[in-house]
Image (cartoon, one colour):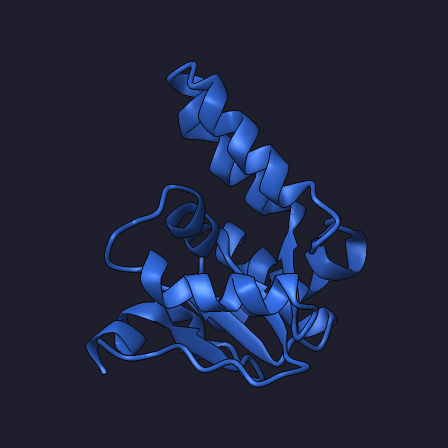
Length: 147
C-alpha cells in the first residue's frame, strides 16, 4: 500500500467519493486518508469541496432513513474546518466549458470547475477521468493504494 503525500500549505479539493470513504471508513481507503484529515486539523493544509458534495453524500442515507449517517456527513461538511464552496454562475459556466471538451458528467465538471476556480493544488478523487481536465492536478486514490 502506498502513502498519500500532501505537502504542507496545499489546498486540497476532495470530491464526494473521498468524503464517503472518510466518513464511512472504507477499509481500503480510510487508512490512506486519515493522515490528510490530521493535517487539516493541525491547520497544515486546506480542504475544499463543493456544496454539491453535501447533496451527493446525503442521498443514500436519507433514502435509507439513516439519521446517524446523515448527521455524520453534515457534521463533517458543515464544520468550519472544510471550506464548502457554493455553486455560482462562474463555476457553472466553467463546468459547461469542461463538459464541452471532455466526457465528464455534470457533477464531475462542477467539482473540477470549483477546484480550478479556487486554485486548488491537489484534486483528490478516485475517478481517473478527471485527469482529462487541463490544469487540474489530479491524484487518484486507487493509484496511491496500488503504489
